[in-house]
Image (cartoon, rainbow, N blue to C red; front, top):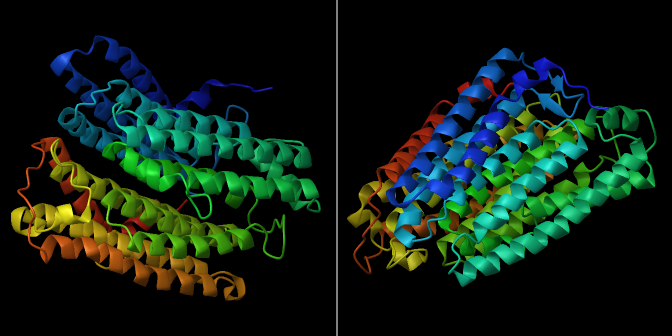
Length: 491
């Protein structure tokens, strides 16, 4: 039985704000006519900002290393969850500003887009704050159902419909594995509470039910983060979805899935708990991480479509995040968890910025998603080329960007594993980072060393320009002062 006390509601600030404003936006769409649609975007940004402030306020009230249980352990408030809630809300607000300009230019003005995005962000916050398997499942489904609809928001786009259908079918398949895995874990431990599961497994031998549950959960979350070989939906969904929705999937959805994996694998099944093999589930994830990084980067090398290239790049980054997840699972007391959170921040900012440039340079006559469409951008629009170069360098892990220190801290945490068990995985990660430089620099070369094939007519949007400037500043700031962020991430 769930016992509710008044103090529990004090820690629901970000989740409550996103949910209430999201529902208001769904209702407001019925009354938004013509130019009044701009109000929907403004309300979305306002709701996101309020959620960020609520998360910061709650973060400041919680001591480092402290977990506050709410609603009989269904939700957990700690510094990690509040940081992630702020990240989700921030990504949502920035992408809403990209979405408004993109909707006007490409004539897919669907007001429900904003409400669905905020409700998806609320589901993400629920995942980040989850203290129970049931909460994680509800959060994942809340997020996923909204994103399925957003992927097909351009109703006249056949590619969008195809990508949404593939995403939906693969997502439903993954949800089945998720439910079965959670059911088997409940059968093995007698509880769905993550802390209880940890306590039971720490004092008992691993059973066949536990092993089967781990495998099913690995498959389910493998689909959610688009790890190899569960990535089949990602390229088509990323290419077919409206560009702001693609940014939302690549940045926020992936970060939310990683948050769920932290709760289950690192905090419930990590440390001294060995559910399978010599080093537990981490041995499986280590192999998947190596394959995901390698296949993702090699596939990205062959892409001439910017959105598909960034889709495979996202697959490769999922592999890098798995390296940090494995390190955090083996040694939760180390720097692994903080390095994963820093990586999520750096990756999300660069992703929103990169897709923001894609939104900005295109128009209704020519969306400019092919590499050849970017020829000569530096001569025509030097500021846009410069900021896109900054995001590409961050993805590749080249200083002085946030992406460099994100990879540095993450690989460092993996090297700190006992007996250097993850040394081979770090070597694979570094080699793959070198491979990724080639396709990221393809974009830079197209902008700076090729002649333009046509006139650039970018969107005239102050909101999009603001997003690009802010993301560019954050990427540089994280690269020049990374330790300040690590101090905030001392979870």
